[in-house]
Image (cartoon, rainbow, N blue to C red; front, top):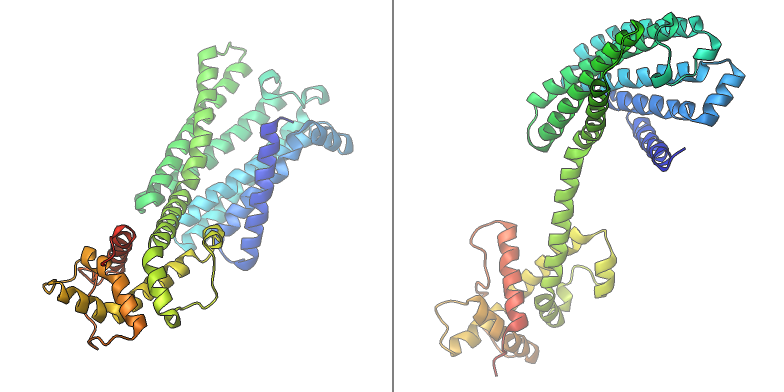
Length: 380
């Protein structure tokens, strides 16, 4: 087995464990049922395609058994894949009714390829596709029937995925259209392979560019299909990560302001357990909670110290308003006056207030004040 095969097997096992766990919590979810069964079939077919799995299965049951079971499981995986897109796009009743109807072509295909494998001589059953003798009826029927169902299942997936994409918006729609393009390429590759099967059965030569083109379509379609499936979740995760880093950065930018206010008003702390800077940085969970807590504590502290800032600023002729630079320059002296017990007006005054009611506007004002406090020259 190649390294890529090991990686694929590991990915299938992890995905299977995750989906089985999710299905156990929501056993009636049709979408989850379909995707879980698709992964189950794909994972079960994987060892049958390896040398050891094929030899063990054939020795236990008979020549060609591993190849037959692998193809049956892969066809079942395609069936459940089309069922996944069906349930995504159709209403519940239509989805259930159509899913039951689609079992018939799958069952017919399984019966046909099983009969074709029985018809094939033992020495010809385990040849790979490229070296299989298409002049033999059993071999030709096996590949033609399996290929026909593959085209059908992919075409049904394409139909329902396109319908879902037209009704979707944003990253989900983008991901679904990538899936649609990939499925269309897979259908074309499947049709090309079926034509090649007929040409080989008739004894004709297969042009090399046709073979190369079909393989190239599949090589492009498979990673594009995977990208389409993960595009929307990745977009959400990226937006979540950006928000996380933004709030972590803002949390630390507020440190100068928060530290000064916390020393003066420790009783306003929403969390009395002290944490160090390194532990705050390394803790991946709770960033949003600590971010909101710091914003609230900074605003509460500013409300309490604002009369002192206004009194000091007024004494220096800044009666028209308290800008960020003025507030940052007088904040240390205001905190010192509060700590010394100096009298001050009892009414709070606006300091670094946002232009609207949006929390992010408030945070921007507090962050700007904290940055100004970091660089301000204190009043002497």
